[in-house]
Length: 137
Image (cartoon, rainbow, N blue to C red; front, side):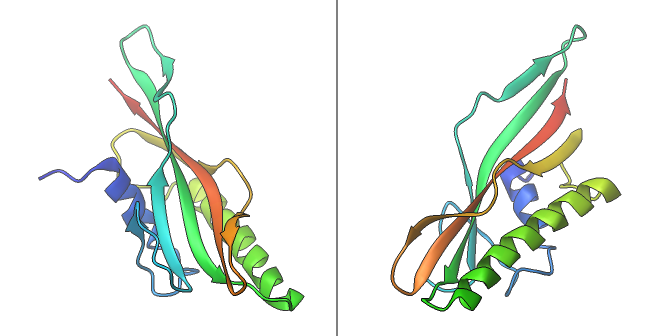
């Protein structure tokens, strides 16, 4: 059975050495520190239509992580640094042409910085909005 495109994106992100434990869920985020998920977000899938009948298609998704937060700035700054480092990893993979194994894949990019979606006194869910584009005919 052929894998879904979101599964191929998940497998690609799991190669990132920044992830502690390396496993990512889809549409499910555990209530534990260093839990990760990718969740599709609604978007018009067709970005561009070509005269030959081909399309540029996009898959929009959120990369989310549960992280510790604290009244001590050093903890929260580490979370911010993780988001920056993850975004740098995304840029580097694109430069090297190391992308998800989706036929016709063009790029994967982040479309927002890492920011807090929700928080408690001890944990926060950070989110980075992302986009994968591929050519399909």
